Length: 170
Image 1: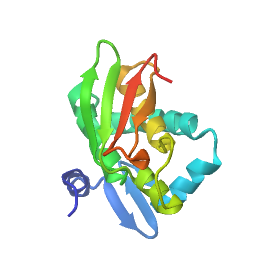
Image 2 (image 1 turned 90 degrees about the vertical axis):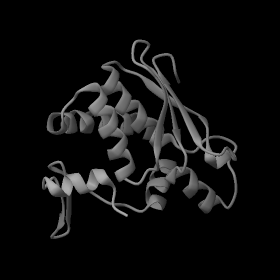
Image 3 (image 1 turned 60 degrees about the horizontal axis):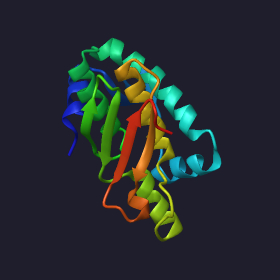
């Protein structure tokens, strides 16, 4: 079933797939299988920083098009994250004044790909790309440079991936 967010984008002509191009909110997108993203993450030691910086830039662009009220941005960032297929995102604890948050991702594509590829569980979390994306999203939201660290991961046998976000994290 198509997400409500994607339906809204289609309705206002802000999402299209035609002539070999995917565009969302005026930005060109590329759909890649999760195993390719996992492999790219494993090959690049700068995955976290690169994904954080690129997410900050992307969220700024999206904010100009979809509005930037705090409540609207949280909802839209959550929907964009899920639309990209990274898994369902839950914001468990949001402390704007302290610039901290706790996020749960119940079905992380990156963690599942690790388990499929390695045929088992990991010793440490495997969602470095996701941590960078969350750090970028919340750096924009909090209007401050924050980091994200994965404290629990599906790939280590936890029921979900949990991330702590804040200034003193990492």
